[in-house]
Image 1 (cartoon, helix red, strand yellow):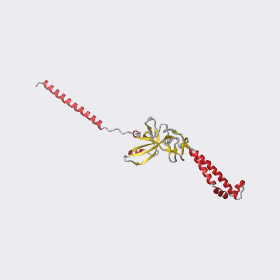
Image 2 (cartoon, one colour; image 1 turned 90 degrees about the horizontal axis):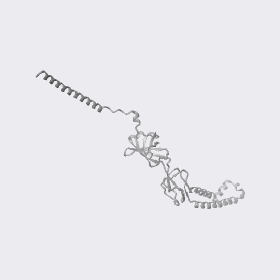
Image 3 (cartoon, one colour; image 1 turned 90 degrees about the vertical axis):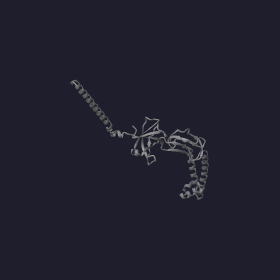
Image 4 (cartoon, one colour; image 1 turned 30 degrees about the vertical axis):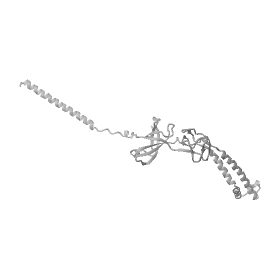
Length: 280
């Protein structure tokens, strides 16, 4: 083998050895980079990020009270100002009138009865020696006895009761709100204890929702929550937590209620979305 062939052999072996070393070095660097990316710890969230986290709960807007409108006496309805469910009424608005013919007739009879009682009262005092124009000179105990014996006191009480019942013929709305559950009609017979209809107090609303037991600590009595609805998703309303159930149900949920301010776009029955914190 001549010198030229020996040189070529050594050059070839050196080139192979260099190539192998370079490939091993590149593989180690790539492996190290991949391992570094795999085991790199995640960056912990800041306090601001944690505090800004808000859990959204689905709830329902409800009326705090639904008030029945009753008649206090049994009479026929001669005016009924309620036409349909959902009709708005104002507190003090006349919503129905009852027939007062029978009451007015009873009042006339009672007044005639009172006149007779007054005549008997005077007759008793005159029988005791007092002149008609000087009946007031009689002692109080004698006048009281004369009123009792004549039936004057009983008749005057009966008259006052009838006149007071006359006011029952005019029925007014006890609160402002929307009409629901109409149960009577014009010329129907009103009965004591039977509601003519109901009024939902739309000026006093609440949102009811359930939260997981693990989230309960986030809610406190008097705390603020933000409420939105499907119909008006862009509107946010601030509600105040007013009730927290002391019982956790079988599903690990806690019932919470929060009062809402009156608003024209808030109605009982709406689906609501509740988040912690006041509306922004």
